[in-house]
Image (spheres, rainbow, N blue to C red):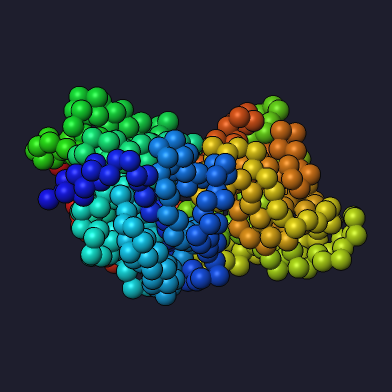
Length: 513
């Protein structure tokens, strides 16, 4: 039974509890052609995980609780990559082998009192639609882990599966989008593990998938429908003390997997009927509010015209179709073209294009060179812009994050590298060219390159919602625009082949009551 392990642990209270931990973090876009390989992952092993203390990450949040609880932490491995295309299954197989080796070694060297995991929840490999569920199922298959407390944290843009619920005791989702509470959610999940160890009772999980899928632009928690759902989830927790956590999962609309989309998961003790009733309330609310998750977007030329009529700045032109945080290549040229077409003065945009960076090597200040900028990473986005540009500056692209509560810090830590980068001036547009796509979640990205965002008239931002944490503080206005690209908000046209049916708005009959 579930309590056997905890009862055994209670008999050895004089000993420090041993908690094994690891991390697996990738948000997988199924509708881009690239394969995410081993070289795309930042990999930390053993003691390197302990060095994440203070870096603002979810692992840092877990370590804070571990220190407070005086746990003996047993680090295994951390595989983290930026959102991108389908992951080569060999990468997951390698991760699982390393994690398994660490797990079995720890079990043989004195046993374990629990496991804590930092997950994303939307990974897809070339052979597996649910790596996180497979990881948790594997843990349960290891002798000695059948009832071992398994807790963790995950992104609210996960595609939560029944397997994840079946094999975990309590996984806690971020509650905010932008993800300002990722580290806080990790602390919360680790404290739930401490509670289980202290009280000698393990929660279990149940989940359900609503017949709804929303684009990332529809999952901001300051807006409906996510705001309504988060309020309801908190009410459910208050009304039902046996429900340890009620998770609202916005889902990730660009993963072609059966359980993609909006989901809910609860960790609970007590009657299962209470947990199922809570899930039904949440799923019904999501279904009733389904239309609100498809927000309208501006025509890009109308947005630019409105900006030019408006005083001051900066105004943010948000381009979710090239959302770097959603797996897009970050080299779309639609906003750059619009800035040039309308002659917008004092504006800036960042574009990931290592070839354009390389083309400026050795340039002197003010030197003009012909560049082919962007438009190389997606067949459905607009192509490269061929233009003469003046060299402004060059750097190695490394910068310190200004905000350790941002989503970028939660996954990547306190520093980020854009790779070799250059700033160029193309007519009236300042362009930051980077070798590595960089989610626009921190103003340090621009400031580190000598660009002062507060002084600009307009800024192009390749994001959906997560940029708001940084840019809302300085923006006089914001315009989310419709452009062609792989992270389009018009998800009904995506070529799903594995998604369950019916799901709104993908299937024609899903909206019928």
